[in-house]
Image 1 (spheres, rainbow, N blue to C red):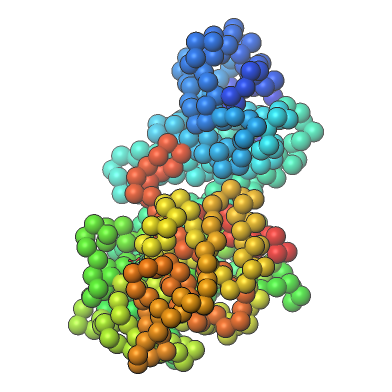
Image 2 (image 1 turned 180 degrees about the vertical axis):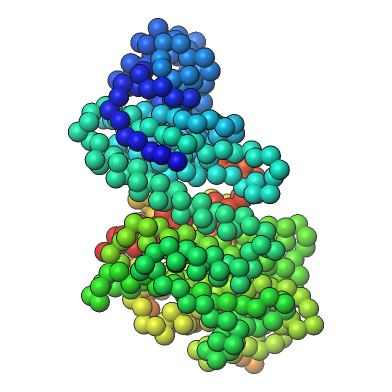
Length: 497
Ligand code: BES
Ligand code: ZN
Ligand code: ZN
């Protein structure tokens, strides 16, 4: 895919598709006006007839555009310009790109809009478009005989003035790197459980690390995990014929004075529920249960590609949760790495058992900050729906930093309470804690369980069970893995610098 930034007139750009935005307002922005003039007022007439409204996400296509050099024109609506935010712009850009990538087209031009009425500035627009072109052209049909999603080959970003070219180029490059990272995460999650299991995930992680000189990868096998006393994670892995792995990736490019942040991911490559087995309907999508780990790997690849001057350690706990004669049982008592004992009341609450050991390893490494990401609880989806990530933390400053980063890149996170009272629900008669807290507040008791393993380290837990995976496609989003939180992780790390 080639990306160019060009101060050419939009009517002169010879491409398969020319894409331009329109807001719900009286006047066309200057670039749109040029196109309308070249089309002899066709857009004005469409607007007068009520067919070109500018409503958010509305798509108008002119397939035989006469008067402009492009063969086809797509006008994408942005809604009320006074209320335009990054998220809405992103949805509009994704909708536009997804609507022209179902067939194979070679080239497209995106007309950037420097009209001052819009809050989403030129550079943000450039980044979002570049990211959306990369993500929107990549589908989940990995195993289809006939492709149903095609990526564009040559894309030109049309700017009004050559003076902004260097900054726009930078934003486009950044958007593209984010898009590639999001697609990596999406691909890993979309792979079948037979393709993506602890060992194969670890091999992919190593491949990614091999691309960058300062990204190191260490992989712990079963024996090493035993030596390291990771009894909680190992118990979950026991029911599977596939061995567990802990993938540790170090990117220490910030120097000794910069803080170090650990990114910890739940990597359950398939969650059957174990003996607390899931019904078929709930099990079908459980290849997505390694999305936390895939998000960490995606974010690290972007951080390394951008060459950020930061210290980040990724830790991905990879297991498969199955049933067999060797599987862990309800009533078992496990000893985690930090010595705490856990009574198992539900083998489907396995993610927290994996994270317990990985988090205590992160705490042992004395990092300054931890973020863990996990498709941890259905309860979080009940609380916040499919599109919002739940945030749980032991440290307000750290939590505010992550929330601010998410806001600035247009991803939706909502903070949840962590009152000590919830600990009562996790008390066990014969061990230090149990692995479930009962019916109510399930996302919170899961987080309170995790808190037992981070010591005093500033820690944020992100429950991505809802947003990590979409069961069906929408105009702005392909079904399957979403790559949610890759941008937020990169932005959080960037803002720590
Ligand atoms: N992997 C699931 C959570 C999940 C649910 C992820 C839906 C994505 C979509 C997790 O391991 C799980 O099964 N959690 C249980 C916890 C319960 C047994 C306390 C749940 O949410 O039902
Ligand atoms: Zn489970
Ligand atoms: Zn799970």
